[in-house]
Image (cartoon, rainbow, N blue to C red; front, side, top):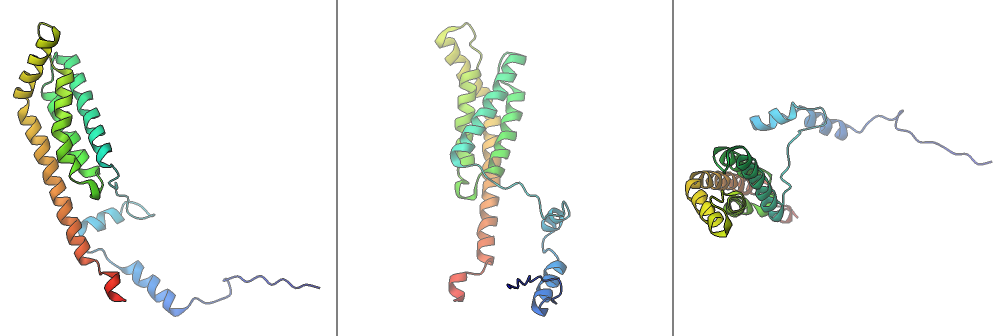
Length: 180
């Protein structure tokens, strides 16, 4: 006759080292207020929006949002204006926050390209034709330059802050290769 034994952990006591590590982890208080806030949000850990956009994704999404804002502004008011500018600035901020750390430079670089494409495609054509559309695009680019600079500079500032934070974080992390 064969005897099958079933091993369960129900009757065994945990190792003291395991309970001490679990207790220390549970009692650990976050060092920064941002960590404390994210930990309070849910029982499964912090819920942070992780940067996931690649460089290409950043450029395409920024262009698509800017083009959509320009198209809506053109439909409502006849040409891109304040609504387009506000949408563009918010899109630049979102792109700078959502781009992967490896592709940080994509946000401030793709902002002027997206702006130019959106304005060129949604500009007022005036009297019509290619010459009228080109003149409307140049005029819109000249009049909306403040929005372009605002969005690009905000994206560059956010990217700069993220890069500095990443470098500081990497310096604080112990190098595992030097420990062996």
